[in-house]
Length: 294
Image (cartoon, rainbow, N blue to C red; front, side):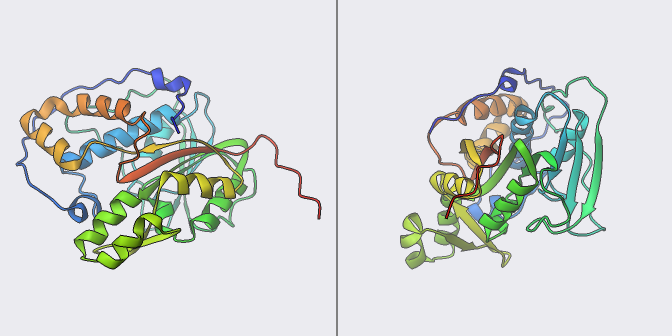
């Protein structure tokens, strides 16, 4: 399945070096890289720069109503607000607020379009069941930051997303891949489980912090999207460059972040689903299908 490109994909990316940081080359396990999001590490600066660029390409030109389910750690909500959208961000607690959009240490994400900023409206609620929102309310839904992998009943969550989307609306989602799940199982010496992982219908993997994540292949993402009544536009890796490669290149040249992001955006337009996380976009049909006759 080859991902489709949209009109926003031709927008130029601009980067500006602001600080030189040299980091030692260290070999980390999959758990060390992906079980925690260390925003100060070279890899995670790169990861969130890629995520920001991918979101900027996905956002519509015209301002709209966006529901963000990605949690307070997600940097995408301020991006959408800066581009003029009205963003409702769902939070688990009143003590949590969306983080201020950070300037990258070694570059800037794509420059926002010049328009009046939108509005960010935090709401306390459950991201699994969106009972507080009426049907056909939002133009787009962002479920990034692995939120649907942490919802083990992912099908129910996607059905709720489909319900609150207006006809023709779109969802951007990011989930853990089977590649990451197998790496975590191998680190924990779960060899019997690992042997069944590639053929499992549902792969649940324990994380070092005691939580459970649900991992997907690209084909499984396509299946649950279709089962929820949505139409898959594309699915691709969030990143294909390995953490060790990124850290090695930035250690050699602290100004390389912008080039790595450009390289990643081109590499993501491939059929090779090797990434630790999968990113997908889906669309709600313009008209709800007629109920089947019994």
